[in-house]
Amino acid sequence: ATIQEKLDQYKNERNQAQMRLSVLASQVEPHFLFNTLSGVRAAMLSDPARGVAIIDHLVDYLRSTIPQMRSDGNLMLTSVANQFDSVRAYLGVIHMRIPRLSFNVECPTELLDCAVPPLMLISLVENAVKHGIEPKKGAVQITVRARKIKASDQANAEQLCLSVEDNGVGFGHSNSGSGIGLSNIRERLKHLYAGDASLELSMREEGGIEARILLPISRYDEYSSEPNNK
Image (cartoon, rainbow, N blue to C red; front, side, top):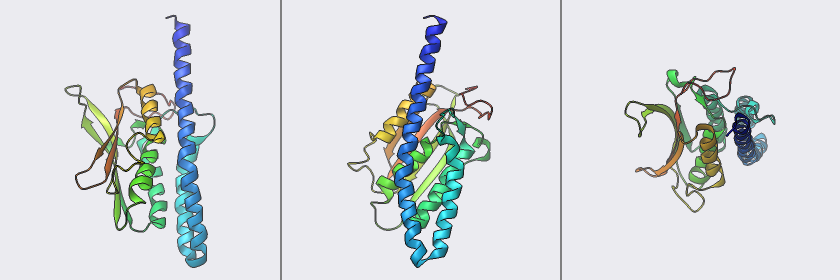
């Protein structure tokens, strides 16, 4: 293939990845926003202080996610720190709406500046809330973690693992691991990392599901949103 053909192919793949990002953004937002605003409306009548707290969490969430959803779609990667800020704010909103939910968000300091694709982690968290947590009665929990793990195919290589664990209802008809949001994530990982990244879902022994995104470890450079120094 000529250099021009390779460039055209790269641009095409990049455009597809950007398109999937905008589709994912449109999936994440409406369900969450409508439910949250309806929760604020209800709280304003019975418990105004709770309504204000929900709005504060919502503002934090939008502040960290809106830059990723701008229509130019240039953001191919962002930092773990940014994604964990989004997740904390998101789960803060959900907890105000579903007080029986408790959550932990854990990330070692040295992984905060790792590069990750935007919106994938929040999509997995929303998936856990929607399909695992909301349908289950009683106390529920979600844990979101970033850690290094050994890569299965190389002796000394390490991967970045982003995991979302819930103790919800487990695999139901609507959460078999093949939903549109999950297949969207798999496609984006394939285009961004050419087979070096994956999404895995598994049943947890204590009930519920663990979803894991495995990525090559690279530092996020705010001046470049392309994958670097794998």
